Length: 156
Image 1 (cartoon, rainbow, N blue to C red):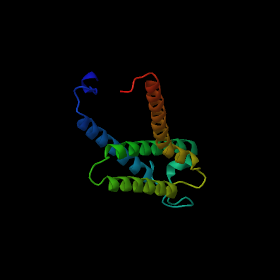
Image 2 (image 1 turned 90 degrees about the vertical axis):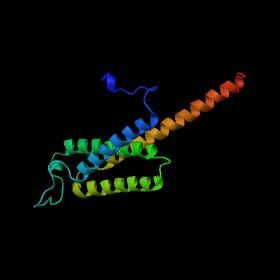
Image 3 (image 1 turned 180 degrees about the vertical axis):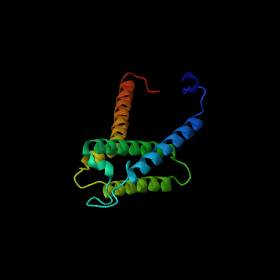
Image 4 (image 1 turned 60 degrees about the horizontal axis):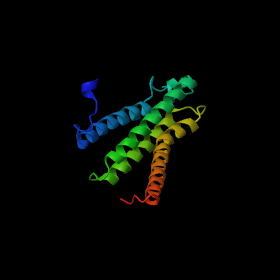
C-alpha cells in the first residue's frame, strides 16, 4: 500500500481535498440509499406494510441503523468543511442538511415503533459533538500555549 499513501510534501492539498470529497460523497450516497431502502426491503402486505423486513431482528437492525447513521453523519461532516469557500457553499450546506432530514424521515417511516431512536440520534450527533470538542480543545491549548509563550518572553 505504500505507493498509494499520502505524502505531505508531494501531494497537493487541492488533489487531497478532491479525493476526500469524492470518497465522502460516495459514502454519503451509499449510506443514504441503504437508509431509505433498507436491506431486505419492506413488508408489502400484512400488519407491517411499509416497515423494514430487517427490523424483525431488532438487535441487528439497531446495529445497522446506528452504524449507517454514524457513517452518514461523518461523511456529511467531511463534505461541509471541504466545500468551504466554494461557490454555492451555502446551498451545499442546505442540501446536505436537507439530505439528513430526508434520511431521518425515511428511516422513521420504515422503522417499526418498537425500535427506539435515541441511539441513532446519538450516533448522528456524535461526529459533530466530537468535532466541536476537538476544536474547543485546540483553542484552549493554543490559548494556554500562547499565554505561556508571552509569560516566557517569546512574543513572536
